[in-house]
Image (cartoon, rainbow, N blue to C red; front, side, top):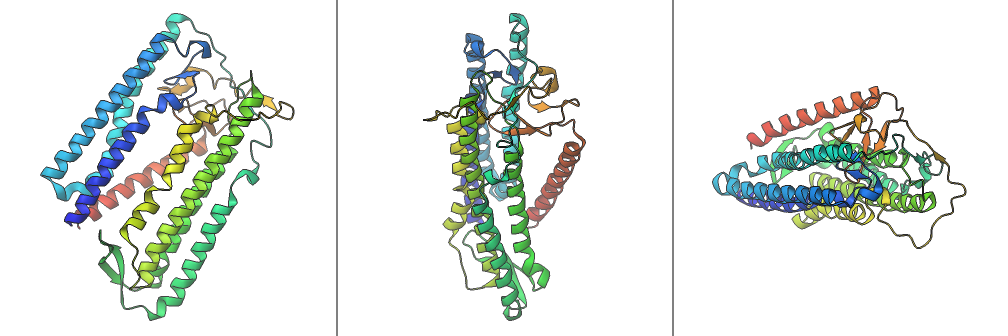
Length: 380
């Protein structure tokens, strides 16, 4: 157990460094027309007050991340057996740090906008082309098809091997990848890993699908450049998400093979590599491209002809529909997916009934999973 605790401790510190760095650079990745969730004129994005807010945000994030890292060290020294459990809950501290850094600056940004009398359009401008929304050919199917084939193969192998397996099969492995927990052999237990793998692939495919379906906003002053940036950004992020999905499928397939073939062992570094390496391209694309690809400098720019532009939903540019500048809630907007105002990702219109139901289900599943995992770890 000491080896597992040490591994979790190193993992916690690595996550702390990475998370601290990522939340600190979010203002750089966000469109310049958004100042901590408040829409401002682009020409004022570099004003001294805005720069001061961003520096303050970075300072709080760095200090908070350093404090969390110190807590991790103290926890490991004083209660090493709690390291695995703490690995589940420490990430929530980074959410608290980010909110502590964001909310005061969001308030300052709103006050600054009011004091300066900055006027901005309250309607969004977005692409309205079939090439941008709903064209499923933009989804990099090769990654998902390869993953599905691997899942089918692993399921067939499990069913073939099932009759020859011993009465007890391993279900958990220690840090040395040696089995430390067994259960009675059953057909349901044998196909459980392929089913989990299939669900994981389906979830990641859905994320890619929603990414393609979302209408991203464009710059009305230079729609050709903006459309080109979006096109490149979609392609890069699509392949990054597909690569992530395939790597996770391979990871779960290898873990399943360790159950099906008792003498089959996967080196620990392979497991860790498949867990962390696939995240690197996603982070790299986010950092290099920026929100909606606005940081991309294409060598050639697509012509404006053929790019349909609509006024978008009235009110999406209005700050009052953005709760603390992060969560969009506009009953008058039919969109379900929108571009966030802080960060380099997509968000939801929480006024839509389907989004409310989905969010409630996700929250319930998250709480249930944490309760189950907490009880399970407590019994180890």
